Image 1: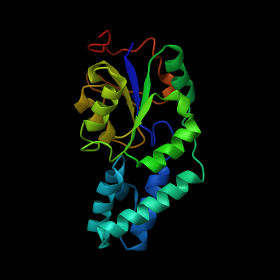
Image 2: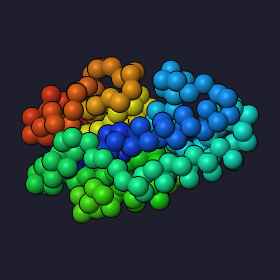
Image 3: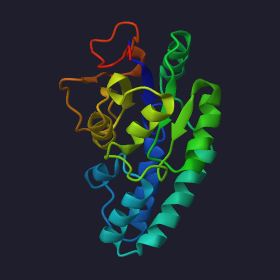
Image 4: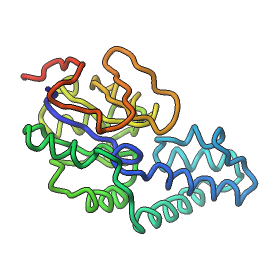
Length: 216
């Protein structure tokens, strides 16, 4: 079994990826930029600052304005309530029973992360890493490396749960094994990466993945 479970948040544990994309679509549409599925695909899994820069490039808005508008819109949607993904709580509780520590590793800002943690139950997580709390965000490895350090285990001994190519790239770059339940296209199975249709399919006691240093 893995030494730790490192969980992405938006789209993976809670169905907030559609809220994120809805906030983006609204802002882009208001300023005459394309907001169809193809236009929104590059935003999946992006942190707020990177998304704001891309919105600014496409819409002519100042990046600071785009960031403030996106932050307010997305936070309001999350505060109104989020839907937990099928199998998420059962998987988190399974990790707890098996004494596998769990960390939340999200590209969302800390206020949004804390709102979702309150929904999921903070007792289910040992620690959390939000965007802006590491030198670089996803797709760089820094967030996953930071979570592994906080848990005191090597990243190569950890299992990461992700739903976007950006997040999966971050986890793989850190050396984690990855289970992906995609919300957007672009994640392909590869050595150390397993793609599944639902978190309900994840059995931590019988994973077809090996974990380097899991007994360290």
